[in-house]
Image 1: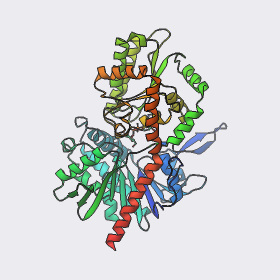
Image 2: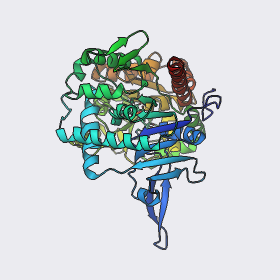
Image 3: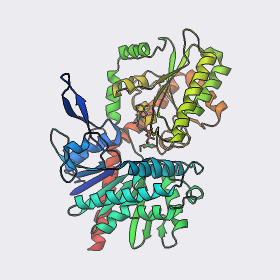
Image 4: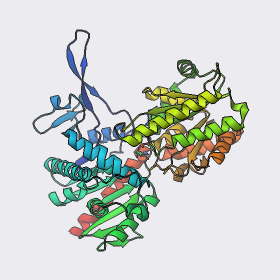
Length: 500
Ligand code: ADQ
């Protein structure tokens, strides 16, 4: 299909019975009080990204979406099967909600998912906390999701898991249903064996994931790491490395790279709509001088994003290049996440202290070197920030893909921005050639790269950015979905052919 037209091409029925499974749900219900103090229930819609992209696919297929019901009013609108039809206007598909107790949220979500799998997969073996209760709750919640999927499935289902919250459920679903097609997209990095072997539950995780027919990662390297981990951990697994197939326990799993894209068309349109008055508003609201050059960073506050390393490079820049004092402002848009976890509280403190230190050291009455935006900004404002920033800093110390880098590129409708990109982000595979590459730990070279970006001649900027935009637009979210579904269809046909 053509990129950017907001859906699959219709020639390929995605599935007779598509069941998407994710931790976060596409719609949440909450309470609102009107002017008379009357309580009403409101629906919050998908804000963007993959969830927003999958929503129209679900509407086309009349499928079921299974997810954790974490909205305060969610239970008030579901039926006796914990289901509600969404979107509210058309009721085109079923949202089936899983209720989690506080203990389950603590153990499955904050515990095993985010204090074990997240650090482990990003190479942080020292940060992983192997608490027995986390593992038990992770198993329990995977089991509960698998039960709900089995109860929702009718004939010949295609079950599609999203992410690291569900490493065990694919095998559970395979055991519960007769010949389902199960696939999984793992949104974060998969580590090398020398890291993965530290995990006490490693074999069970691999066995769970080998319940899939198709397992997708962002880049080839993560697929290879996964194959290597299976090879070393499971004696009975047979690996066909050329075909990226694993045979284990009588079942074949195909492992492939599908680099996720963004809805580039929507970002481009929002960016085009952000005229110079939007830039002026932005500068005035955040007190950014009208003459200063803006450098931008946009991140969820996570220790994988290299925010402290980035601030060190900026500090080095202002220290060694005094001309940039008063003339260059760094705008950090950040959103807090997982704040109940101590490592995330530490990071928030470190980021705050770094910014205070830099602003105290270099700031003047007229100029604040680092402007921190904690508020939620809608897509139009985010795109204005991208468009009117001359340089974007993506300095992840490890990142499965990093969609922010792609969003910045898609928003460069004037082709005049420069992307500085860490070679530790999956996005570097596609964008590294035309971005300026950095190692986030090499402060000196990182600061040099910022100088290079700020002094790059307009012709080179345009050439680099045009090439990046072409890549991001032609490999967008819809092209990605088409490729995943086309691969699933081929594998199902092959299976039916072999079986019959
Ligand atoms: P994340 O770690 O959340 O995702 P990323 O891909 O950079 O990382 O961001 C996801 C989205 O959140 C982007 O659309 C971005 O605009 C939005 N976002 C982030 N910070 C924001 C902020 N401060 N304000 C507004 N919006 C913000 C995980 C993996 C990534 C992988 C994605 C998708 O860690 O490697 O790219 O899943 O697979």
